[in-house]
Image: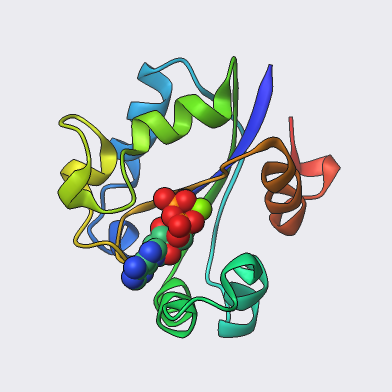
Length: 137
Ligand code: ATP
Ligand code: MG
């Protein structure tokens, strides 16, 4: 069993496709161990994406991530980190495979509907950023 952090980003929450996205995780065998809807401040978004602080898109990305509510989840299952990223599809929806979340719901490389941790170390940091151990079942 592995755990990963998933975020349904502000663009997808605004489109009212939270249920459709969660259903894809469930259909692929991932289970929700924790979930909540929150609205990050710019500072909270900057802290979450601190690994990208030197990238040219950092300011724009953190504006986007704090423009409206998001749904944050801990997903659990076998190979959850890799499986989640497979279900999500490529960062740029133009390159995302058919049937992936980003192919179906993302607008562009920045407004790309979902986030998923990319390694066990980042998953641990990201889960701890949003959830206490008492909130994860
Ligand atoms: P995420 O970390 O959100 O799951 P990812 O791992 O596929 O996505 P990263 O390289 O970690 O992609 O980039 C983090 C986020 O920054 C992307 O999901 C996207 O919202 C945004 N982003 C990435 N590259 C660009 C870019 N070239 N221009 C604008 N925004 C970008
Ligand atoms: Mg990433």
